[in-house]
Structures are given as C-alpha cells and as structure tokens.
Length: 267
Image 1 (cartoon, rainbow, N blue to C red):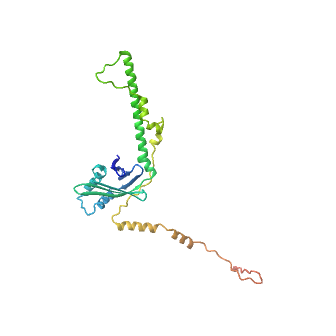
Image 2: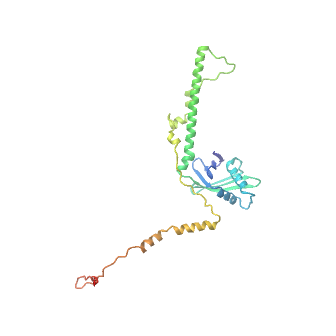
Image 3: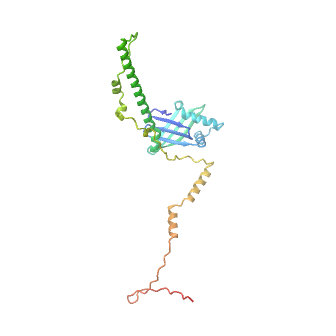
C-alpha cells in the first residue's frame, strides 16, 4: 500500500514490500525509485544509520525498522534529496523510539518495466475497476427507476412523509463525470494490458560479506579472472603466426638475385 511520505515542498509517497526480501519504493508521482535489502543487509543499514547506539537484539531492531517504513505518518523528520539528475534519491527517516531512531539509504530510479508493473498497470486496474463499478451502479439505478415508474403506473403515486428522492439522471451523471470517456472513449481497457506480465531485470543486491577485506578479496579475484583489453591485445600479438621470409640480395646489374634454399640430400 502506498502511503504519503511527505506533502511539501515536493510530495512523495512510499511503499514497503516484505514479500521477497526488504524492498522500499518511493515516488514523486513522476519518477519511481527503489532499493532492495536482504534481512542481513537491512540490519546492517539500520546499525550504520544509528551509529553509536547499542541495540539489545536484532529482532527488536528489525521490528523498529519495519515500523519506521510502514508508519510514515508517525515520522518526526523526513529528508529527501534528489541526486544525479534524479537518477538517485537519498532519504533520511527519523522516528522517536525513546531516542532518535533513523534510517538512511540511497535509492535508484527504476527501469521502464518496473515503472509499468508498480505504477502504470496498477493505475489502469484501478481505473478499470471504478469504470466497471460505475457501470453496474448506473444499470441498477436505471432498472430501479423503471420499476418505480411501472409501480406508479399500476398503483398510483407512492406516499412519502419526507422529501422524495429525485430519479437518477444518467445523462447528467455521465456529462459530469466524464474523465474516463475523455481519455478512453466508450471502450474498456484491454485485458492484455491489465494481465500483462513483465520480466523485470535483475536488481542490484548489496554484497553480504563478513568484512570489507572479504569484499576486496572478491573484487581482486574478479579482476584477475577478467582479462582487460590490454591483456587481450598482448595475447593476440604474442600468439601471432611468424612468417618466413625469403632472403633477397641487393640487385646485381639491375637484376634481383634470390637465393633459394637448398634441399637436403636424402641418403
């Protein structure tokens, strides 16, 4: 569920998803940013965000971190900074837990595919659901009005102690609430779009290394295993085929003399 993170000067909404790891989505209703954590890296991020504070156990730290994300209305402070021409978003969220409990992290702008899956497709589903609901209600009201008209024709006017409800004016209603008709006409949103499944590109996950030296060791191994362009060129030069050339003597009387190699005698 999307919840308002900040209303002004720029409005942002946040969504926290725990179905597969720990995912944070933030949107300004134009762009969408995202960051993914495993449980271990999420705990590490919380500890780094609250440097100098000792926590009794990881379980309580995890609960407070989730509470901070799912209850943005209880936050004491929100700082949002757009970076690198909106490609990244840095946030600091502060909640009171008897002390200033923080989460600092950096999000990256999502791919077009994820934008469709998380925002566009869901909005189209909401629009389609409201349109279908409106159609059902309009048909029900029109049917009831016809039944009342038939009843009054047969039995006369219905006696009311209070003010009568005006008959439903379908034409007036559709002229007033016409945004769907303006943008989609009289046709329904194609089910192929509403049910479309997107294969999302792999999201970067923070390496779960026990120490910084371990991470450096992995990076060094990767560098050794991956040949550079210079190494590839060196390999190509050293393994090129040597050509044998025929020795040519200087010209004698304007003619070029070529010394042919004698064949060995086969005794």
